[in-house]
Image (tube, rainbow over all chains, first blue to last red; front, side, top):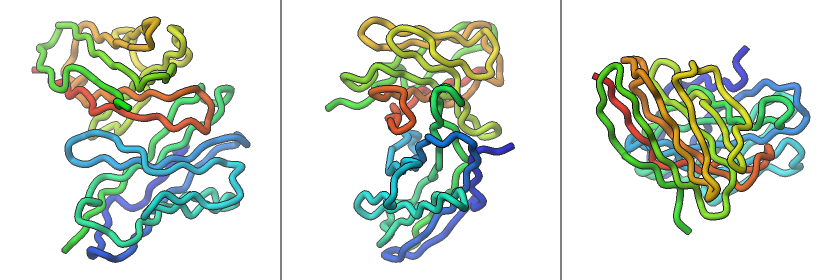
Length: 117
Length: 114
């Protein structure tokens, strides 16, 4: 079974608008971390934001926020005030405990975001 | 603070050859992981090293191997290269191996097999 599911292969947003990228996950491990990464066409993977399974509040980092709904097992990324430079592939990833998966990152298939001027 | 450095950035090899990729983690980071990214399979975990010990290995054949040195720098080696090994190889480092530790990635090595 897929551990990380990103159902939106591609998304389009107008510059300065907000956009939500969906991510659902599957784990029975009570301790896990959820991460979002941005990958521009040049290839580097840029860490954006982290949410821990025990965190009570949603994570925020500048224009990025994470809408964490634990009961639904979803961790959607919200980008506010989109900029042209936000155009990239976005990956949701999960890191479970060492006992469960040896602390590897498991990635979703990604969402290609295009910001239109 | 310098980021994760991977060398070389690009590499072209032919079938049957072998290749060694290098990764220098962020200073102070002791965990290094390697991932393979292809259009068909996405991002797949290769292996993880911590304090010179391989802690975890993904589902790849024995042709893929790696090691970590005492300064936390890591190398991965692929022997008897196949066309399907063409991919972007990404190295990531983190301070520790707990689930709350983000992994920070290098720019990757793009390997092409002719």
